[in-house]
Length: 107
Image (cartoon, rainbow, N blue to C red; front, side, top):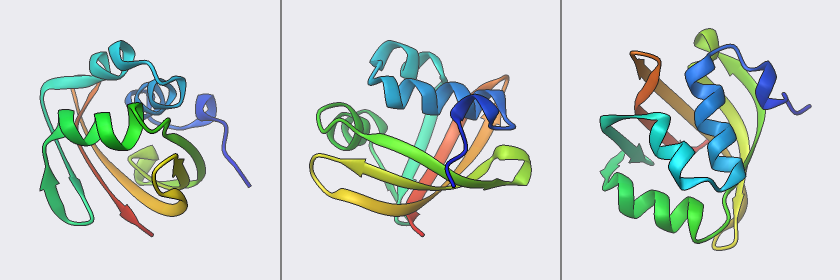
């Protein structure tokens, strides 16, 4: 069962994921703090390079299956043109209403 993004508990996570699905770079950047960081499968990555490759240039899309930690952790089916679809976990740290860090990897 997919959870509609507008029903997710955390507003910062909602904004981040909606921008991802809209392929809207400006809205995505606005959803992040200026010093935001991220990791993929446990390794820190360059946020700008990773998001360009894994989200924007490969048409990334997420469908949330479940959430916990007041919406700061989601299990989702993530797909892009490079890797196809996979079950993933996303964990978010939020600061001042924006995502300060996210960690993703296969679930």
